[in-house]
Image (cartoon, rainbow over all chains, first blue to last red; front, side):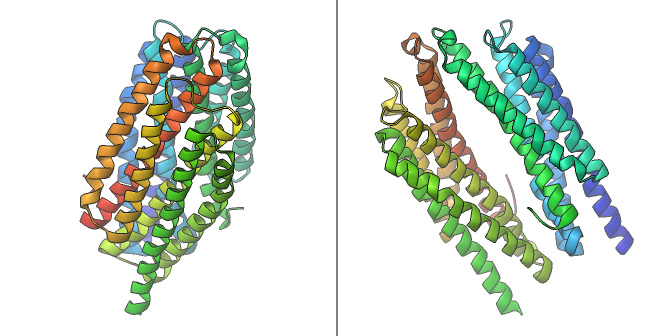
Amino acid sequence: MREVFQQSLAEVQERLVDIAELVETSIADATGAFGGSDVTRAESVIDGIERIEELAAELDELAIDILARQQPVASDLRLVVGALRMSSSLERMGDLAQHIAQLARYRYPESAIPEGLSKTFVRMGALDVKMAGLIVELLRDQDSSLIDKVRDMDADLDELHAKVFEKVLSDKLANNPTGVVDATLGSRYHERFGDHAVKVAKQMQYFLSGSLD
Amino acid sequence: MREVFQQSLAEVQERLVDIAELVETSIADATGAFGGSDVTRAESVIDGIERIEELAAELDELAIDILARQQPVASDLRLVVGALRMSSSLERMGDLAQHIAQLARYRYPESAIPEGLSKTFVRMGALDVKMAGLIVELLRDQDSSLIDKVRDMDADLDELHAKVFEKVLSDKLANNPTGVVDATLGSRYHERFGDHAVKVAKQMQYFLSGSLD
């Protein structure tokens, strides 16, 4: 019985890693499509979202099943409860990748990035992709030193997000409402992606240390 | 033991209702502040967010404690797992009310609503407030007939959100990037509020029927 239980917990962890890997691919393709007006990459993100949703729903079922049958306690309970929350954050990260891809597809063959903002968006995209990679590593290796890295990157992302707004509200984009909308939403999606990565990191901290501080 | 358990479950439900009531007040104040440039109401929303976060964290602790000590099954398990998810959706609804209030405060004494969009935002705000009220009712009375009403209102909200974008991208708001940003974010926050209300409704459906369809 104990062995079955340990196997179930290992499976929870593996499935979290699987979903995180798909999210990493999605955000790499989404930010690539956004920066490079690449409609094929944008569509692969949009097509891939269903798989992430399925895997998240299956993981939830597994977690609820473990709660019902095996009554985990202490750190095992924290992993299973954490998995329910992490699956929801990972799913949301996938949604945000999809939103970024949709912006790229709407504007194709034009770019969704208005003039003067390319570098900022490339940096935001690179941070999102790195954060997704750190989340995969964190879920796989359970190395708590990665948690602060995720937080630091999120702070960088917030700064870039503020920069986009400064530019958007300067006169440069007057007469370009489409550009203002794209930059506003695009920046918000990139920034929210980081927030959800931090949520996953916090859940891992809770699992590893029993504390949320 | 069974009695203690039933009391715990009743407490989960009561606390969900308490949080939902605070969210209802927040969104009423936030949309009121947004529509009426009322900085006092905006600040009351911003000050109130901490209480919602505290209550959500306490509810999570209670739910995890019940999972650990009382090993609920069947619909009891669905309520406790659902509570973990609903607390997160309710917290997010509170965040969105706060974001709307912040937009109102930034622009004060001006209005955050650009010309020609007042009526649309009043309707979106009214839908958000109604949806929050339905969620309170649904959590309190567990009346599944309310679930479809929440979904219908969300569809109306999505239509209004699309309308805002039409206006924003027409020429009327050219030369007003601040107005475009406010309308873009304001509309998105109103619309996301509805999405999270639907998530709560779906969780209640799952609790009441055991199915997510």
